[in-house]
Each structure stands twice: as C-alpha cells, then as structure tokens.
Length: 145
Picture 1 (cartoon, rainbow, N blue to C red):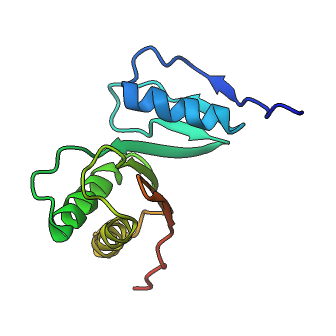
Picture 2 (cartoon, one colour; picture 1 turned 135 degrees about the horizontal axis):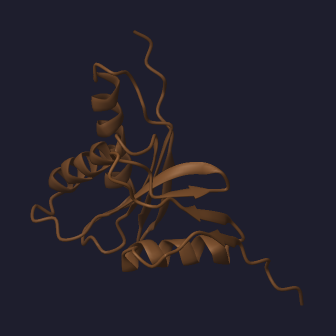
C-alpha cells in the first residue's frame, strides 16, 4: 500500500500559534508545500504561502452572539481584518460553537460586499472557512465599477 507523499515545510514554525501549527500540519499531511512568512515590523503580511500562493489564517472562537446573524457578522469582520494581509483568507472556525456551512457562506459573502465598496478596490481572491460540518470554499464575483 502506497503512503501519501508528505509536503514540504519552508521556514520555522517556532513563533506560530498552536492553531497555525495545526493547520500547517494538515497541509503537509495533504502533500502541500507550506512556506512560513516571518513576521516583520514593516507592516502586515500574510502568514503562509501554500504551493506558492499567499494566505492569511485567522481562527474564530468564543463569539458572544451565537445567533446565525451574530456569527455571520463576526465572521465577516474576521475576514475583513485579514484583508490587509492577503487576498486569500483561511478562517478556522472549528472551535466556534454554532458555526455552520450556511453561516460561513453568508459571512464570506458579507465580507465580499464590504470589500467591493472599499476605496482601494476589491482585494479578495478566495476565502476558505473550515467548520465542523466541512470546509467552505468561496471566491467573490468581481464587481465592476
């Protein structure tokens, strides 16, 4: 029986959070190449490059308002917070009680709407939201101005 090919890690995980380390391990186990982008004092930057593409990872837990609207708003804010670091955002919401695939999709679409209205133009390329129900992959429709 063939063993899956383990991915390649570039850089150090020493200063990363446990959530970031766990996500990197999942990517490596899936055969992906992950480059850790070191933090700098020169401004905000993405956390990783996965197979050469920059991504920002956010973790969502402990949202006080666990109604579907409260979770959707909190997720949208989390995604928008990542906007200045990368156009590709991953939100690990497995630790967030009440998060469903439907709420994840609605929160991402809220963020896409807000992104399209920003004066510096539309930045998002993709959003991946990991929930206990599965992973939601969303790409925004490009809004023409």
